[in-house]
Structure formats: structure tokens, C-alpha cells
Length: 197
Image (cartoon, rainbow, N blue to C red; front, top):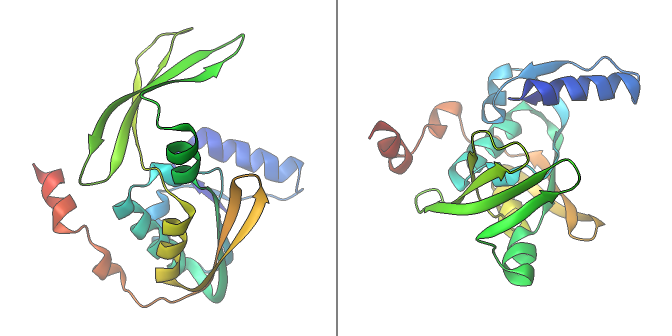
């Protein structure tokens, strides 16, 4: 099963499963933080595509909890990850403006447009100068391998790193602890209060 909030990504995954794996892949539009509501069990869960920057620390805790609930007792959790703290902040430096894509078809730049102290996220606004429609603003959290691994360890009995190539890794979480219940994972006051204002 492949889950995502983006239908185009799900359709691409279904097509890939059919063409490459010769399998009929189930797809489901659902927030990954809510997969525990599926009430199904799986042997392996994979978060692929260097997706963690789209989850702030509060959200990633809910995500890892949710994934731990859908795995069998000896299940494996795999997170495709890169050490952004090292790569972005230490090696190249955070860019207030950055050319993201520059080719014959697109010229996209991003700009730092804010910081949310409660979520620890940088706000970046993306503008496509070859087709300047509405700018897109997103919030990103610059995760490092250590904190993602440590948070996975909170919900899994053991954690390991597998270096794939260069700065790309798989973080492996083994055997979910399953010590929390869904009702214990409600939004904390610091987040809940901000949403209500």
C-alpha cells in the first residue's frame, strides 16, 4: 500500500508498481500522521523521498507514533534521510535566497520568508519565474540524522543507519515499542493554543 496526500504522487506510485514490480499496488489518500487509523498491520513501513523536512518536530513525533502502530511486533521502519544540519548549515550555509531549479524549461527560486519559533520551521516561498503564477510558501524543518534517529528510537526498540550514497541514508527502526495509546497523542497545549487563536 502507498499513502500520500497528493493524488498525482499516488498515481505515479501505482503506475511504478504495475510497470516495474508487476504488482497491483493499493493506494490511499491519507495523512501519514493518521495511518494508525487504518487498523491494518504491515511488516515494513517506508518513508521515501527525503520527506522529513515537511514534518515539524511536533508532527514527526505523531508520524513516528502512527507508523509504530501499524507494524507487526518485529516490524521494520525505514526512513530515507539526509543530514541537512551538516549539509546545509555546516557545509554550504543557509541561503536566504536560492536558485532551486534552472534549466531550459524552469527557473524556480526560493526565499526565506519567516521562522516559526514554536514549530522550529523556516518558511520558504517558491517562485517560478518562467511561469509566475501564485508563489508557494511552505514550512520546512532542517532535520539531522541524529535527531531523526533518536526520535525513531523513542518508538522502536533499536535503530541503525545504512549509508546509501554520499549524504543519503536509510534510518532503520526495529520492533515498535507500542507503549502509547492514540488518546495520549492529542495536540499539546503549545500547538493547540496557537491553532485556536
